[in-house]
Amino acid sequence: MGLVDLEKHFAFYGAYHSNPLNIFIHMVFVWPIFFTALMLFYFTPSVLKTVPPIVLWDHSLLVFNFGFLFTLIYALFYVALDKKAGSLAALLCFACWVFSSSIAYRLGYSLAWKVVLAAQLFCWTGQFIGHGVFENRAPALLDNLTQAFLMAPFFVLFEALSFFGYEPYPGFHARVKTRIDSEIKEWQDKKQKKVY
Image 1 (cartoon, rainbow, N blue to C red):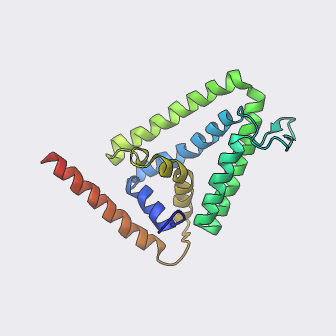
Image 2: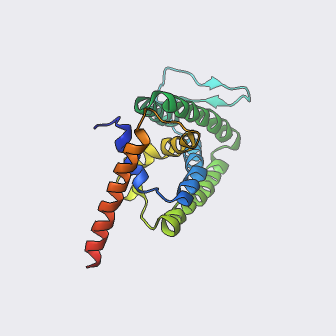
Image 3: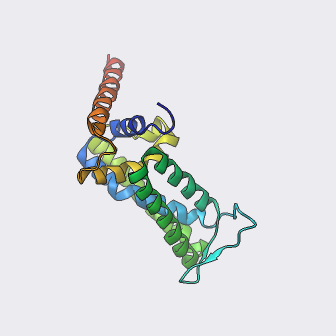
């Protein structure tokens, strides 16, 4: 158990995402939410004042700001959870930071925040529909906001890798499925008690 307990995190998130259509909706919308949030973070001040911005191939600036800080936290957390899948997730996080910074630089703040707002509203609406229509359960973020935000990108990537047979160690999926089933049953029992 603990901060880097992959089974615990995956079971928590999986208990809120057991319906295949809801999982698919999250696979489509979670990474765009992460990407567009980083676009908005592009306009935050640098956290490393002594490190100058890096000029990219399209003459945009890569600033070590809150977007970089969040990317670094996500990347390190994912690698700590699982070296292989976490390294891929970390690479995707840094790719999102680089490309979102480039797009934000080109759009400028006055247009970027409008693009971010539209994308966030669209993606969040899709996810809430997934939970309300297909999962019939409130999103994980209502029970554990930090854990839900932190795990969402890794969870959907991990789900995609699982389709190709990836398992961090033998028996992982069976053990997590048991925990997910237990958590869903516990939630259903609580729900039943509230009805009576």
